[in-house]
Length: 241
Image 1 (cartoon, rainbow, N blue to C red):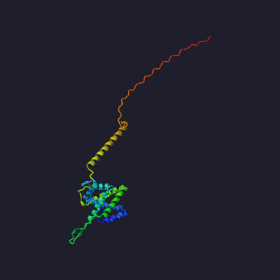
Image 2: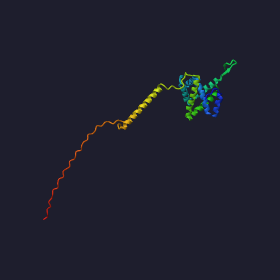
Image 3: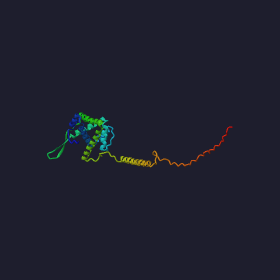
Image 4: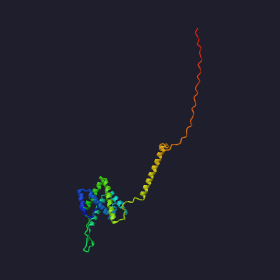
């Protein structure tokens, strides 16, 4: 959702009081996209002051990832973002455009004021509520990033900002690594396939080629000589006298 002009504090306060997490998410997405697209140096400066590693040349997606990663573990980041959001809203109110009698537009600078502590705390409370929702429903974190990236892309295209990459560059070493992994997977596939074929042909035993054993010569069993039975001598019976 894009908010072109609205009473930020009034709407945000209504969302906090009613517990309308969807409304708060949409408003925070809109405000963060404003900072990332139009106030990038402010965001980079805040992250560096909090010792959060970031490069001034980082893509918009990298900045988003770093913010989301650290929101749940860095209360100072929440306070800092709340301050920048409040400051950005107060700055936008400091100038208004009027049309003179000659039909030309003129910018008139209003008396600006610094965001007060109450407003900053209110924004910080809303941010904390969104971060807490990430803990209970991790899917909301992914949805939050998708929403934020879509709005950032829309605003970047609107201003024709081509000086900063939208998404993290995944070419170079990441593509090379992917090619190596794919090549290794293909090689492994054909290796296993070949092993299975050899095994099916009876050429492999337990994954290894068995050694060739020379044939054992066949010996003909020799018959065992049997003793020749001697004939029993005939006995002439002797008659008793």
